[in-house]
Image (cartoon, rainbow, N blue to C red; front, side):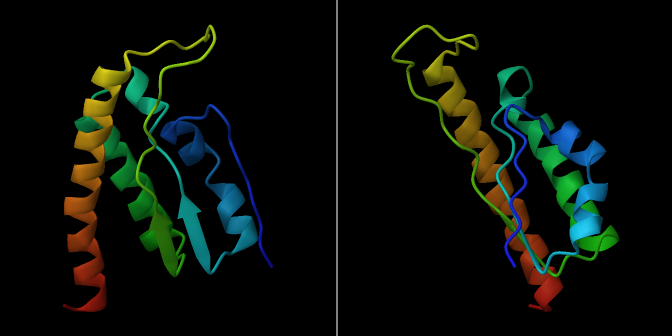
Length: 116
């Protein structure tokens, strides 16, 4: 069975506050696409920290067997007026830093869990 739960516009803290929804489903695999909305007003470092905290809770507290954390999504210049305008060059730099941090640190988590 495939269960999709989306929270458009949500931040990592919102997902953390609704983590009980994951317990109800008891997934074998959880795919997370998070962090983009947090980068609007947070640093890459603080966003990485809250993502790691959420991921740790999912893996070690909820005991979800497999968690896939997707790279944070870049933004493009809007083609029309946006309620959330963003400097895409500055934003892309924050996304790049966040994705690098996630990649560097999650390789260590993966290695330690597999015993490598």
